[in-house]
Length: 402
Image (spheres, helix red, strand yellow):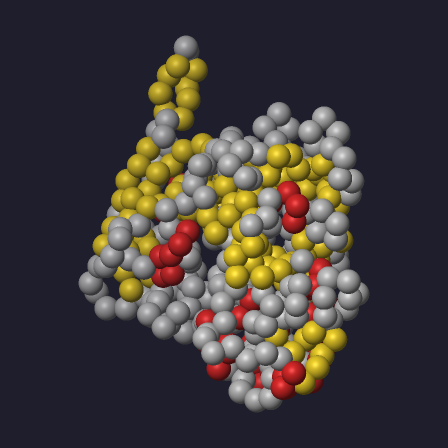
């Protein structure tokens, strides 16, 4: 069955018109612990469409004091430097977050784990940050051994004063969260509210697993390709937009391992090929081709990345990136992939082929989700509290968010 990556194809830019009605200004300033609500009539009216105002600020300064705040829908988390005095160039960092919630920064388009030697590593355990090059900081995460998990981050700060809150609460796919939808333009940011866009980069290729719940039912790349050869396509996850259509993929023939002898030992060699792409039906239990025509071919590459065996795909330009689950602005940096994950279950070593992505080293991406300073975060929390009844109504109509 074709799987969607988000609940509704809502575009954040359209939120200001989503819930018309009386607006309320969330007022406050940097010295106010929590932003409070006042009538919109007291807010200055702008003749032009309001836009965030660029604020020159070193990236590292955003982590100081109360630091950065992030919202996973209505769940608030915090990341900050524990001590402004660096030790050997390192600033220790701390995160405050509810157990089980998303937090920190997004690896690629979002990662539940990073695969090294086939083993999943947690992508959300930052240890410290250092000053990097070209205005970036480097956040080092727990795990990775001799090759640490390091994320380069550059923040661009904007004043959000007077802007509606709803459009800034989006998912990793840049669609509205339930909180963003119900808040919409009913509340605006107060004076002193700052939002941050995050530009992210890594030095070398990494294999990312976006979700731990997705699976292919195969235990090897060879078996995966054999399973989806000839008649049965594999339906790719897609991002629902007005134009996106689900795409199926199948192999002309099964992939077989290729080896060569090096110094008397057999070693696997990298290989490449093509997979067929076709339109598939929506709303079916099993993946079924729509019509008989083939859309195009995608190139596949089988290789090892950081000790993980991975099959990655490059799609032709005529296939929209949303149709294979990647934001258009991330198309040059991310590759759809399937990787062999090795884990232990009931004291046994188990290998599974997981859907994933390869983030190419040196390719910068823009994180779709905003981060905020404390003033902005307090205003968001207040708006979430004030729209709790609207949220209940939304959940009654659409189902409670899990």
